[in-house]
Image 1 (cartoon, rainbow, N blue to C red):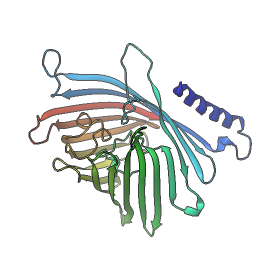
Image 2 (spheres, rainbow, N blue to C red):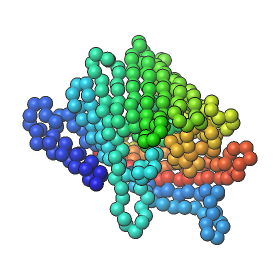
Image 3 (cartoon, rainbow, N blue to C red):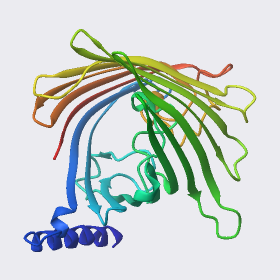
Image 4 (spheres, rainbow, N blue to C red):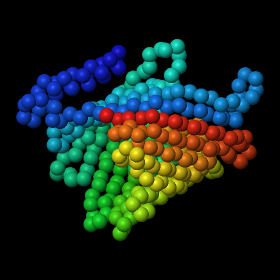
Length: 349
C-alpha cells in the first residue's frame, strides 16, 4: 500500500507540472525526473560455503536494479528529493533484486525522501532532513565504512566555503538507526571536515571524520582520507586512500584502502579503469553498513578489486568488476578464498 501511495505522489506531481507547463514559474520548471537501470550477471566462488555434496561451487545469478528520482525546487531556499528503488526492506545497503522466485513480482521501496534547506542568509550551509543521500564524503566512492547504496535517516548539516583556490567542507549527521519505544534510541552521530584544493595541475582533497553510536558501546571510528586528481598526458587519473580505526575495540580494529583510477567515461568509446586493495578487520566498522560486495559483505576480509567500464552509447555503459578476496583474516580465523565477478549493463535517463 505504501509503495502504491509513493507512486501516486510522484505521478500527481509530474502531471501537475505538465498541466501548468505554460504558466510562468510553473511546477514544470521546478521539477526534474531522472532514473537509472542496471542488469547484472554475477558469479560468486566462496570457499567457505559448500554444496549439498560437501564440495565448493560457483554460484551464478542475474540481478536488476532500477531507481527513479524526483527533484523539486520548492523555493529559492528549499528543495525536495524523492526516490523509489528496487531492493529488500530488510537490507539497508542494497538496491538489487535477484531474478528468482518463479516470476514473482519484485519490491519497489522508498529510497529517498528529504528536504534540503539552504537560505541565502547562510551561504554555503545546507540542512538536510529525512531519508537522505549519505552526507559524508568518501574518496573515489570508497565503501570502506559506508556502502554506496546506503541512505541514512535523520538530520545532516553540510557546509562548504571557497577560500581562494581551495574549498573548505564540513559535514555532520545526527542519524536514527533504531527508534526504541520503551528505551533510548540508537543514533549514529558523526562529523567530517576537510579541504579540496587545486595545486597546479593537481586536485587534492584531504579530510578526517569521527563517527560513533549511542546505546552501542562498540564503535568510535576515526577516519582519514585523501584523493589526488591529475592528468597523465590527456588521460584523467586519480590516486586515493582511506583509513579507519575503531578506538572501542582492542584488536582487529582497523581498515584501510588505497588504489588508483585511469580514464573517464564521457562520450561513446571512452573508458575507465580502477584498482584498489582493501583490508577491513573484523572490529573496524559496523559490518551492516559497509560495502556489501567486498568479501561477501561485512568485515574480516582483505584483497584486491579491479574494474573497467566502457561507454557503449550515450548514457549507457558496460562494466566488469572482479573481487579477489580472502575472508576470515582475523588471527585464529578460518581464512578462505572469495572471488566475485560482476558484468553490468547500465543506463540512465
